[in-house]
Amino acid sequence: MVNLNIYRFELLNKAKEQQVLSFYNEEEDLLDTIDDFCSYIHKNIKSYTDAQGKYRTFSLANNQNTDFDKRVISGYFDSAYTGEYGKIKDRRTSSLKYDILKGDLVSKDFFYLFHIPKNSKYGFFIFQKKENHGVKMVFENAFNSFMRSKGVSNYYLELKYAPPRYLISSFLKSGVLKEFRLIHSMPKMNEDSLNIDISKEERVIKISNSAKSEDIKSVLVELFNNFSTETKIPFLNHGEYDEIAFVINYDGVTKTFYVKNKERIRSSVNVSTMVEFEDGEVTFESLVKVSLELISSAA
Image 1 (cartoon, rainbow, N blue to C red):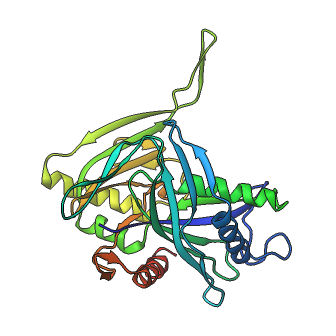
Image 2 (image 1 turned 60 degrees about the vertical axis):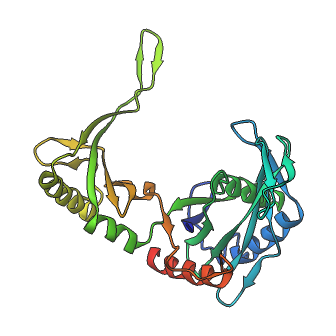
Image 3 (image 1 turned 45 degrees about the horizontal axis):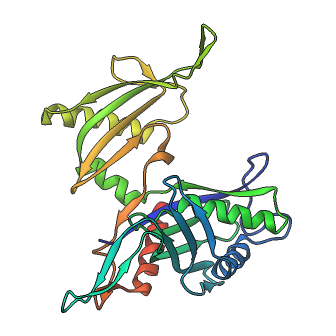
């Protein structure tokens, strides 16, 4: 299965003001900056220890492909981690070639693509999803650290989910509602000198009746499509809420939708039927093509 994660990014200053990506810091173009970052991270492997205590590295598998006319940068990341035992065996004979020790780096290459439109405050970052190889946080940290090393500490990149419209439409139109959550935000309470952070109160409603599921889904989809800037979200005769989340299953995949904070909707897309394969491996050219199509739908 070939899955792509889609993010939209902004460049913000310390006042959290969005910058025009092709003309920030008075004269710099973020396309050139990301191209410089790719060259840097290819030569200077980033190493770190994750929350589980595993040693990890993050770099580029090869030099990036930069199309300055289309304002697209693409290639393959190299991500590796330690902490797992294993064996490498011969495919034909099953005889042992060598052991993978706990201190060895287990490495994977996976596709990425950046698109930095001209005169826009938004860009797009797509990467291939691989189990046990996270990208978002390590990329954000590495890139913002690179910006500081360039002496541009007043700006930082922020990534947010950007699911394509057709994906959302398919779930909302043909998916099955499994549950929904009515959420109240709660203030911090100071009781008996103890700080108790009760951040939210939720009512979780599971759906088992198919007819009722469709009726409630229609109400939720209506709210999702038409909610604008009101502070509270009204829901039938059950009061008003700070957020309403609902879970829909479509084609074997479950996704959570949010009426107010739509940027929380995860944007992993299975593109297995949309790409081309050679010798069992997805081709780079088809990944680039599909990524640009997804960006067009997410923009």
